[in-house]
Image: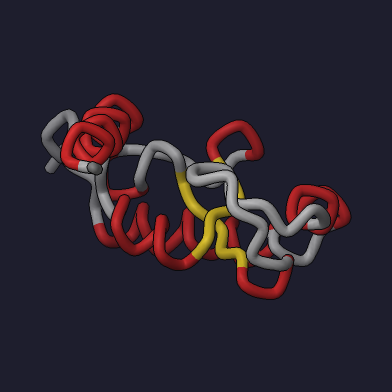
Length: 100
């Protein structure tokens, strides 16, 4: 049976998470987090407080590749969850409109 197009299986997600774990151990990732700055909010939180985020979420078909992985503070990563880049931007714009 062939999975429906656009549906991501648990096995695919498990495989991509394993790739992400191995990328966390690389010099490339250490350089990405060296500044300690969150990709999304721009705050300096320190390298130890940064998490690896998939810009295109795994659940939405994203892959654990260098072009899709960014350092994010835990707050941004938790809020972004499964949002696509345009959805995330719309969310941030809505927050900016509400701010006094």
